[in-house]
Image 1 (cartoon, helix red, strand yellow):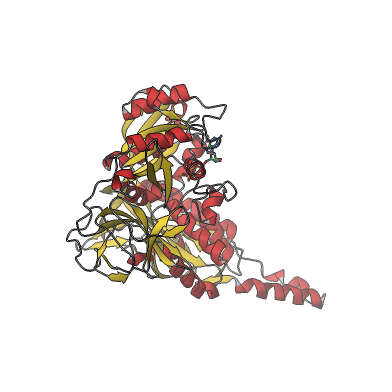
Image 2: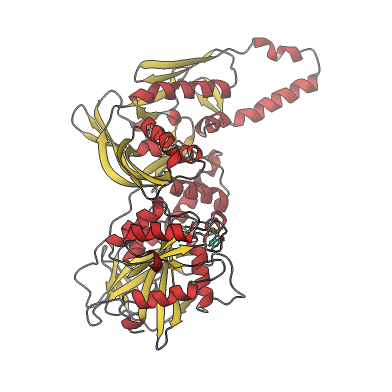
Length: 596
Ligand code: GTP
């Protein structure tokens, strides 16, 4: 297809505003998926995506659309809508010339609407404003057309109104895409350059790489080269998704399609990288490649220690399809052998741990999420700490923690409660703006460490679910942080160590010691549970000793009852961990770490 007849676009929206449903209608109306084959959220392939109704990996699909005179090829690139996956969103946007800004007509603008809009504007995309779900009785298109128009600087009349559910307005939208979104530009004679905007691992086909051709052409059976690593691969198949893969005799300027090279690991085909041909290769990579960096770390341990090898295999498998997942072996006194894993954010953490348990049948325990601390020691050395138990106690000169700029959108009635919450999380107010009479945006500079720990849950409960949150990294800042340890009979329980602000250390210590006192059964001796900063004890609880005569009751009596009791104890012992002399049931750790 000549570039003049190609339109590349994406749909950007806040979570749940109906992007996937609209995409489904477009597939149906353009005829690429028959009514019979249609199923909800056609493009969301992972089970977990379908169940949670969220899009994790983006996909591209080509659809024909007829104007009065010509047939156009529309390439729709589905993007994930969640904060953790901003990097993937930005790569998908870079593959497009235009974006549909989709807003729920009953909800209005939300935090991710803005975050995604700003990313689209940074990529110079033409924006088509659209209100969705106009079939809903609660829809208020008049009001939200104004809101949307004032946001992007247009006229309320120009805001299209559609329903992804009924299909109303979708044909007009397709026409508007052809009229307004610019055709791709590129040099057909130049050496080939294609940008990778997605890379998916497929059990049968290996890695499927989705690309947007910028210059030149790629043909089947060519040798291609990845510009970041200079690695060369044989091209086994090249084609377009519509939405099932259709091999073609090549891809030209502006086209969007897939490549299959037989590589088995997405790390060899990284999102953001530039593909060129091995002979006559391009000299300059396309801008924009960065490795996504994990922001949140957590220890992942099998509940049953003998599952360790299986856990490693499962992580290796997940890594094939998710280059941003990081992990390395780690041991814990309390939890045994496991892995320290790095995630892009909390949702990413949840998705990975859920996939581990669902797809691989593993029972896991994850430790409290931690961020990356930059510790400068008294000798001037810089230590990167992602696991609180590796904190260089007693040698710390200063600590810097990662900061984020958060944007919270909420109805104005909740402003007081949310400000209080943000302040309690050491937030510094950067600004406040009214989007309409009721909707306010609050911007705070906050430590990421305060957000990864149940901030979102608190935000939702304080606003009855009406607030939305987005954040972006904003450097590091020094803070008065300390490590709090928890000790059982004088022995440190590493899984409970946490790096917290000095003002909160006491509260953390009290909480953990209380929890453990309730969870650990009494032993033959007294067990003190202490929380400490360095050598200084800040909280203490005691588990009183068990009376010696518990078993004695059985002696001389019913022998089978006694045997039963002993057998039961043996069973229980298997799941006990020894911390010093103290026997702690695994369940106690799990319960203490998972909160209330
Ligand atoms: P993410 O992929 O998580 O970002 O969500 P999404 O934006 O793709 O939203 P999705 O298409 O999953 O729709 C969210 C919910 O809104 C679903 O329950 C849909 O059935 C519903 N929905 C989507 N479009 C419409 C619409 O036009 N009208 C009505 N009434 N409901 C809709």
